[in-house]
Length: 252
Image 1: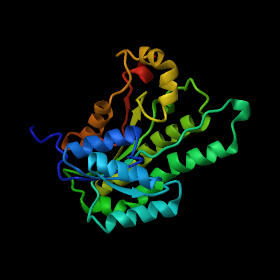
Image 2: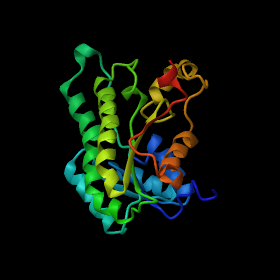
Image 3: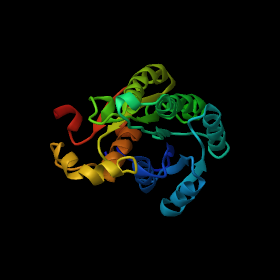
Image 4: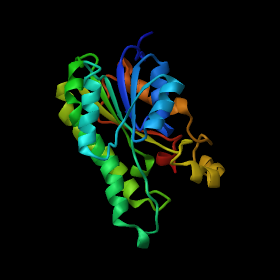
């Protein structure tokens, strides 16, 4: 039992790992002993994460398939396997229904839905390389409770994209299970991220009050869920969408 939640020595990639929930996950995996790579569009953000938490940062625009392929090539030149792929990079867009533009759909779906698919496919050789029956490789997609419930804000493309991520998780879990790769999703609620900053500043207390636990998420909450899914404790879990939201999406 002492090693049930151990991820020491595993190799992980966290996309969008230089800020917000991705940074929380990357830091948690690093502190738990994993070798962690992070990807972000901004080179300076990658450098800052390297300095702050000791990960390896690789700049990449993951809204483009060619950049997903390049990132896989960069990792494969440094590692002979990838044990954990966390598809976290994402974008949001809010606007009233009558004003919601086509660009909001293109930007959000390209990064939130197409990127996890293209990255997972690009990394299949590395994911398969280290996978075993007892300890499969892991793909963890970061969805959202807005993909489970009807959101309160007019983020039409975002909520639709996260529902798509959840279902893509189910489909890939079926297809990749025989290849010794589990695929699960975490659906976070409100966390103190850049994406949520303005909303929390305006209505943080009210949002916390919607949770039965009376608070917003902490870094350890999402890092802990990721470590569970990445460790032997989560080796028999696949195709799951796990809300990490203090109960907001299932009790309100």
